Length: 472
Image (cartoon, rainbow, N blue to C red):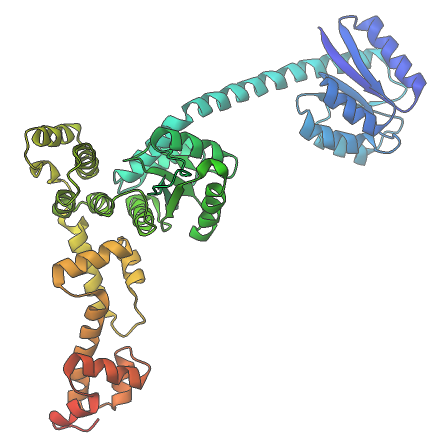
């Protein structure tokens, strides 16, 4: 059996004796180096990377066990054999815990030495084969990683409501499934200093810049917007990461929108919130396109079509936008082709925008109504538009738009209207004072309650109580 062995012992006669035995009994094994202290042994083994190292326990500067701890991390494929003048159980126990193949007591019997070295050489070959298989597997995974990442992103953005496909891709990539999205795009500018990078080039640069920072999945560009999924990372931490990345010279002129954290079954909503954030930062996406994509992601075909129809008459942009929105709605290549044919013929692709597969309970309108029902039942709580948007799975901007379009009122106006209606009923009963009524409907400040009541009814709470024959 051929191989290479490194010898470490602070006694020169022991080194010479072991070396002579190896040359005589194992002529195919080369002695690649020797050391008389632990530090030199570590440095020599890292430099030579032998198959086997014979190490004395007691050496100046660094003991054999200390050296083995360091070598275990630096050269894990090298198999150690420990030499000692004292047979101690505690030392032997620690040695075997460090992966020592054999524990030999000086003076070493040559037959035992030969058997130990041969066995260690076999163990080293096994370790190297396992390490090679592991490297091959890692290289194969890295080669396929972009495809797996795109699969994860596609599953997330296409609306995997149960999260099963997302979990499968995430498991293959070794990622957690609860996290948030960031959307990257070129910022609109007319200056010559802008980088102008977008699409596939931006995707590749982001993949290179992010892989050394943390686990993530980088997707293919959607209308020159690159989605990146960050598992097990809160939004504040992600903002710090994206800020650091975009501060680098390679990303001049690029901005990002960071969404909210969602579980896998709500990954599409997480992406929608990232798009909304990107839009709010005046990204390269036209506002109508961002809104249309967001509406399409939530299954709101009519809203997506209405927003698409208001876009600038740039033929290339309108074709790309229509295709992206139809795909988000239908996930059907035939529907995208149908939209393209309609556009080429000068028609609006209205039929292609009809999803036909999203249930009524999933649309943005239904979610907005769900938010109002929650407000009706919890009007006395400290409610906010942000909380409602998160509760029903819409972005703040989208919920606000849908409420205004469907009811003509903002969220705050709805909340005020519901609270004042209940306040009027309570005041009419005469069982509570004005202050108690205000607190009961969510106004802890009596003065603020009075002002809100007057804006809504034209009367103060006390005036209203008197008009119905009751005292406030």
